Length: 421
Ligand SMILES: *Cc1c(COP(=O)(O)O)cnc(C)c1O
Image (cartoon, rainbow, N blue to C red):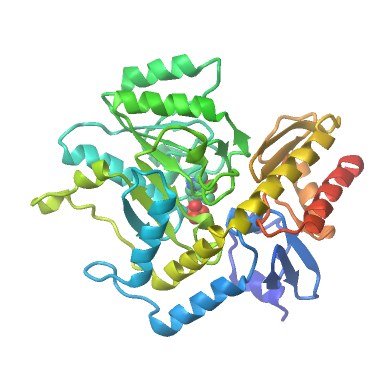
């Protein structure tokens, strides 16, 4: 039996209708922005393997640091014990974040980082003896697949089977010039019930790479601050350079109370989640009363190997060459989008930093289930490019180390697809 046959016998893949999906492609190795399959065919990973990979595959620096760590300490319980990697990562991460972020809480992935953030906010009010339990979120948001994270995500086909069990959330539209005043007065009206406001800054990723302007996010944040509504900035996707700046919150002159990280945190090497918070949040849990403890933890909280990967990724991230690469991709995306923006098949094209997204004109409504999706996916795979359209929305968000030649090849194939599909 070959690997695909063995896979199909035992594996259930994520976000995959196993009855109709094409067999998976066995990948044996990665290097830079590329992945290689069993037959040696090369694929440019233009989606950074579900948005996690920022420095390229099998990066030797990360590999070395992870190997060293594995030979020293693979894991230790993180209640009652600590280790160098967790502390150093906390110190170095906080230095990169807005000045009010003072404490680091570790978990396993983006969804758990969001769960922790939600619990911090809800229990913050609980510990203070105030009944504030409503959460404000954006329509069409995506914050993860666990139940709490799902509850604060937009109701959609992803959540349909569970909708009746998800806690109620106050959803508002993305802000713009037309609705910002209405949104603000809505928040003022609800403020005494609101525990927090959770948002994806500037870009709603899984919701279809929907982008909105920093100016209106800043206004909403300033208003939440004024009204005493806590803010959770979910930077799981936008963190570590995706939007052109180190973190998306640096596009606005406001500081969130809590921030969530995962995806790029370890450079895409392994799973790790981080939730950071201000001292205001942290202090609300300090007490002689044990019931005010944040009762949350995972078996692998602050796993030393994952921390080593994150530290190695941070070495690379803070090297000036990385910001240069980010700037280079931003400029290239802009130039390419200007080239094709008036193509009749380009319904809309939008960019935030290293994220370029275009809606393919299909005559139909834009949707995750648009049938064009499979056609486009296969077309690019055949051309040796991994693009995973969200319905008829194609997006390009490569590892920052992608070469000009590789990037130009991706653009050329998108331009060719516009003519051929
Ligand atoms: C991917 C994502 C999550 C969930 O992260 P997982 O590691 O997949 O659980 C949460 N929030 C945002 C904004 C994301 O893009």
